[in-house]
Length: 548
Image (cartoon, rainbow, N blue to C red; front, side):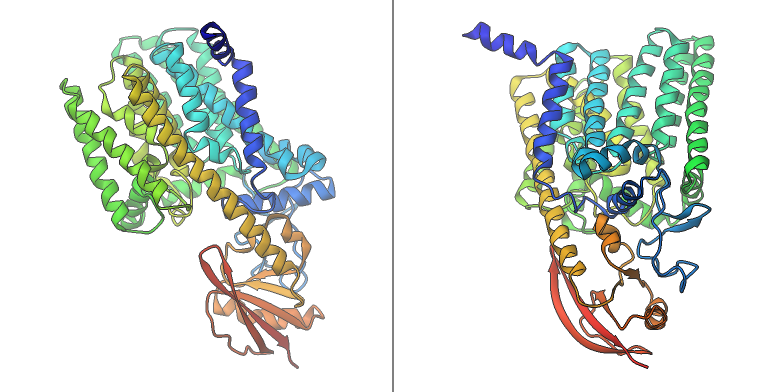
């Protein structure tokens, strides 16, 4: 009987069996979600584009605009932040994943297109295993595989059509290749491959530029410190070459099928770096420590105290005293318990959503490879905080711009746990699975609520539906194509709506607003108000009729 159990466990250590099992778990979990509701507004905008691409059988990511005749500048375009290009109205800045998903979406809809982020999370789990094997042994590698696959934000991002999972898989995979370079294993070939993976990731995730700089730069510095000057130079040049080849290929794809240039988005992030330092500091705290999106809340203060404890434990650990490490571990467990007890909702903090990552800071790195992984994960954080896009720190899961650091730290944490007592492994991973499970349940609740709400809006009798929140219509995904929408963020924008509706030959419109009292508009008369609820938010549907 014991031999039978052992053989079954050994079967799980087969990469193909483990991959199929993890993918199967993702598929089952995805059935809990509505295919018409998502983790964030960016996903909804991508799915709206993908839906139209599939319906029109085109590779061009054109959203179109029903009111283009009366609003040629797109000031009231329903999908906020949509720009006009030579090929049409384009919102997306990431083309490779959309082009790969288009045939899948045409064949099996959103659920089949989700195979791409699922495969991304499976690949990320294997990349973590490869890194962990470089740090320790195969047992640590498999613990890292399952911890990253089921006990980290990767399980949540596998269930949403976003580029995070494949992007992080590429960055962690590049880390594994660079670890091989540090061991002088085919440095040219592996450096080129690492650069290509980072280039592919950069077509999907802007923060890749930071991680590419830190990972390649860190490897080159480590080689220089070992006096492997030639290998250090080769590593830098080969990585840049691999990156440039893939980046150039993406540029050609953009020119061929249209789309907002990825380079302009990266340049915009670079120009915005180190601006509004107060806001950046606040969002850095939220995306690293917060249990909930609220700004400057008590949970953030608790998180800061825990971060201080982790740093002290790390310093003491370097001096050979691991006692504070266990206290920091208890702090990590406490954060995980608080996340679970607070119920469903966004958990924006890296450490709160990835408890295994905290374990990495409770023990002194014992090898050069271990120091490289932890050092790169931590060194990248201030740069990401300095250049990340502002405004989206709260409504997200697990610090989405710092997911690579989270996964590298979780991998190092899995290595530490594998070398420690059984209660350390079981307790940490179990709590991490529960935290991740709350994220899955939150996505289920959120996606179904958004689906139901947009079904209600599509069924409204008014000719046009206008949103006052710039990101609201982006939530609807394929509902974008099911009726006439507009977005009017400012009062000046809203004042333009009656005339546009009149010139379009229509007679009424509804306004979705957080304000309870409607006002008559020039050219339109308020005709009634309905109070509605979307998750925890109260929204009002104000009806208007066009008057001459």
